[in-house]
Image 1 (cartoon, one colour):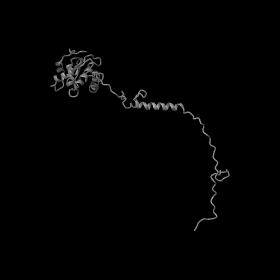
Image 2 (cartoon, rainbow, N blue to C red):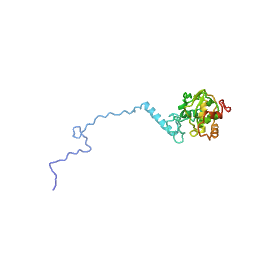
Image 3 (tube, rainbow, N blue to C red):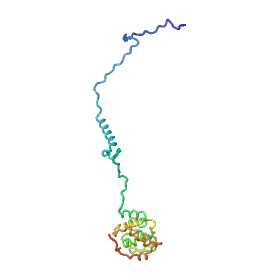
Image 4 (cartoon, rainbow, N blue to C red):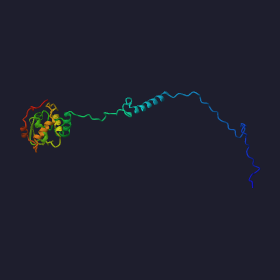
Length: 230
């Protein structure tokens, strides 16, 4: 049975060639469209400048050119390696400077950074006959230490014992610190070599206790070392 209702008529379908009239139900008024000008407004100059600099820096990272970037850019494949001195330590070879480091870490607590020592306890190393005299005797003191009273520059010291450093410091370090003592605080004696310390180590190798003043004076009397070369 058909469901068609003859009272309902389909809407009128306009012919494709018929123009939509302003009074028609399907007419929609379009807003006015402002046409764009044909000429394009140029970009600001600073944009070109910034882009140019960015391209230049990007290119330098691949070509190995680092002058403009002051070494901040990647050197690129095959480019020279970037080197920086920041934090780099220069190798120290001066025995006086090396000796000062050893002295500061092992001797300055008693003899003071000024070398003046402490009255009655630790003798002064400034213009001391023990420092400026025999290098062999001075090396023996450094290797095995001193015990008992000792006279330095007319003053007596006997309350403290100086330890030996033979098992702690190498011949090079002992030579450096002795060279530092003989060249600091106005002292003008010549340097001590590692070979001279090694010779003293062999000569006094049987020494098991610290030297006393009398034993040290048997090694050499006071006075300049005849082998000293300033």
